[in-house]
Image 1 (cartoon, rainbow, N blue to C red):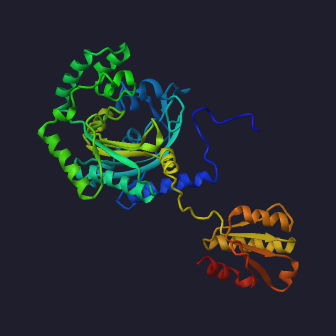
Image 2: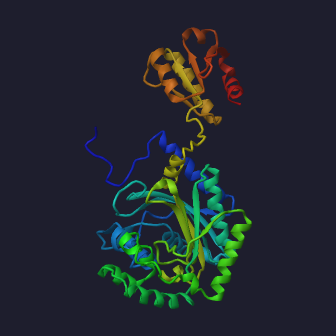
Image 3: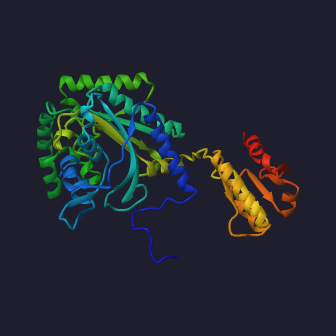
Length: 420
């Protein structure tokens, strides 16, 4: 065994399980690619201030979970703990919002990092696919993103997930609610840190997962009772559009999410098979984030779905994805001339888009056929000196065991016919 191991709270993606992760990423991104979202990729680290301003000084992510570093040039950087702030920063830097086509619709996939207690479903390094629609205040965009996420999950075969939906109001109505909530929280038996958080952003206390806090929150004022008429109308339109699309959801008046930048629509995807870490993804509207990080007013909405948590949800439901075979054809050559000719044929098959592999290492027939079996290939191409002297190779169906001689020059057509 190696002297080194993966850091605590991280994981390696290794075949064959890694193929499931790739399939999940593809399934989540497919509805986005079909809906006008273009791919964006941002650096794995950013200026610390980008996250402290955008995500929020009072959040656990900023106060406890960010991996930060100081460079030799004295720049203060952080490994990205989430994707939205980075994507919005990149869009602003590239002036995508000035190209006259709003909203700017972007999707991304990558790794994110948070220092937190490692447990099943919660990692220090994790993978997400996300989507952002930047520069438009339209309830149809909020609905579109929720519908696309639902479509992605259902295309994977997931059924036992729920969509929780809430509105967090806006700068007009939330201050009134904030004051009412702070008054309520000051009367509770809370520790000093939680009371400090209540003064900075009281909504964060509602998101506290500790039972000692949650049981005191019964009777807390609900934001839905403080929404202004504009926010009520906006939220009702989002609900109506989702309902018309046949997507089921649950109203959750206590849903806050863990980031400070959310306004109005907020939503979460939860799965009962994941235990305490039930969220598989979520998102919402963040109309003020652009201004928080120095940009113009750009009302926006987005989500991020956890790839690793989605895989855990699939496993909890016993869903096995129909993954394409890694190898369709495996070539077994006996003798130097056969190695040269079959290696050329493998190259030809690959150029034609057929997945093919080769028995490397000069193994004998028995060992090479074991490799062919382990590869999962549907067909094996076997040839020795006698076969080549007759101008043929042996094409074996690995499922039925049927084998037939095929002219060397006709191998490509024969393989195509068998795999059709």
